[in-house]
Length: 383
Image (cartoon, rainbow, N blue to C red; front, side, top):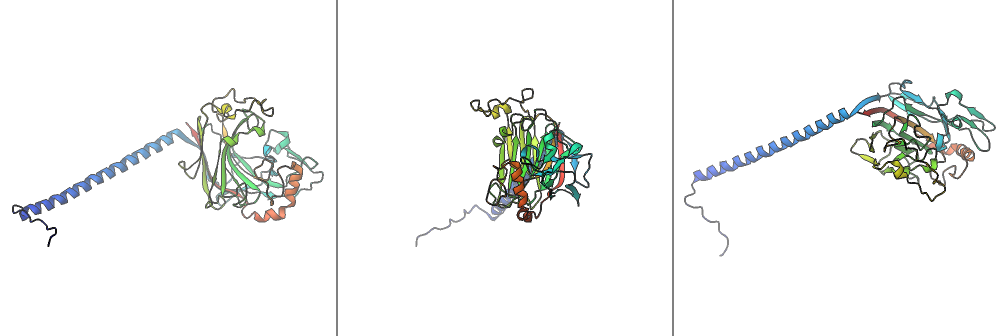
């Protein structure tokens, strides 16, 4: 019968030699284990050193200039802005000093409905108005205007930074036809009215339920605003924006950290941690080369460059402040027209507001959690 047979051991291979070979194999395994352990420890040491260097570098690079965990709302640190209609966004609200409060270590920006007799009413905020534009400080009830009946809140830090990092831990509202924004806005309008002086929207979320055409609490927009001074229609935010949307995430259900890192050559916005980037935008030739208005279009060919006296980073080369706000409705197009929407974007401000308020019995039932809630704010200056 044919088959493989194990060859006989050579006669000279004694039991002593076999024993020595077995000990050598064990020693070899032990040596290999020691080598691999050493390599692992070395690698971990290198990672630890790299992390230490990075953290040390970041500590030197960014200096913490402001931090608030909201044990109270300090008037010395925050300005509660007051004016009508969200300035250039034609919203249906009035920002007041009464709609922001602290409760259990959390800052709430909460809107309220305050019915106003629309017939012939005039409301003038006078010296309480924080806008430099007279049109933002007075509202009339007539054929072309209306008095807002939604009171909201808009807070601005007293501190400002020119390049740096900001983080806000927040939870967004769940309420139809509200939208909330966490942004950096210029301390002074150095380059003129919006969008000339720029704005960085770190995070903007609508309060509608997921599935709404423009996006609801499951969708976040992050963007840069820039364009010719005073020309709202010339805003180029569509060139520097991104949308974060996930069917498994609802920004009204849990707190998240919304951050921005801003330098002379880039803006990076991120969610929860710096490595989770939402938007990374650069401008190697400056913003006027990005705007590039069509010189053959009579609607825009007269727009002038507002950043001629600035750097390549203009308008984002001057002091900016953190602004947190909540708004209702509006005619800027942020809410797409759908059957359930009480007004149309093609309406004038007066009939649009009237239609919105008249339908309050339907949309108020959705205001289950109408507050923009903030747990903490941190601001670092780039040094």
